[in-house]
Amino acid sequence: MEYTIDRIKIDLQTVGFSETEELLATVEKELRRVLRFRNDVVAADIYLREEGTNPANNKQVRWRLGIPGNDLFAEGTGNSWAAGLRDAGDKLRRQFVD
Image (cartoon, rainbow, N blue to C red; front, side, top):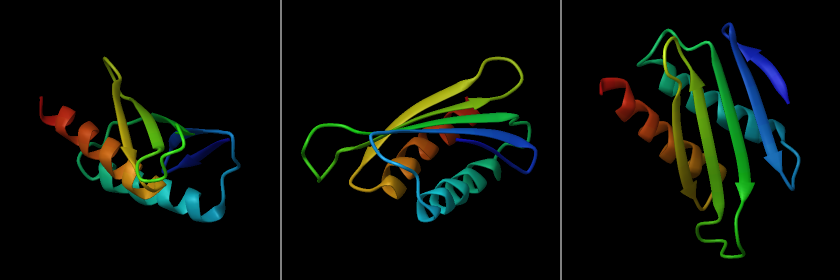
């Protein structure tokens, strides 16, 4: 699913399930949290997938931010999509200062 938030092209891919309004709101909330630290993002590719059968930590998030120069990439996991997005978002934010 492709859409735009604040002139940023978002490509959200879900594997094995369909995105819901709640999931889209969670993605947008985490994206806005990450964007507070970087204002030159032009694209975000977010890949969501459930890995394995362990419900305690089976949500996998892969996130690529398109910025001038080299893109940033991070992976996160969690027991919910919000936790996985937060994990990946925190890893992206740490790359901003490096």
